[in-house]
Length: 100
Image (cartoon, rainbow, N blue to C red; front, top):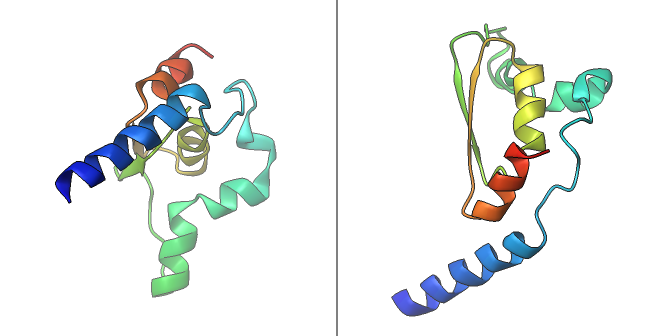
């Protein structure tokens, strides 16, 4: 069973090594897309659940499976002052993120 899970992880990693996701160049700024920023704003989700507004400064947001990093960029734009940490099992995707 453990070998099967390991094989699946390896196949997923290989898939994203050959076809990184998302394929949005980092030069494409989300700042002009209010709908996208609204969806990725921590305040939105927190408010919908608790009916209170919170400050994003000082918060840490994990983008697990960040791929090329576009959604990490959106999170950073939507949550001023928050620290965004992006991780991905595809080294090629993260490498491409650094080289956009």
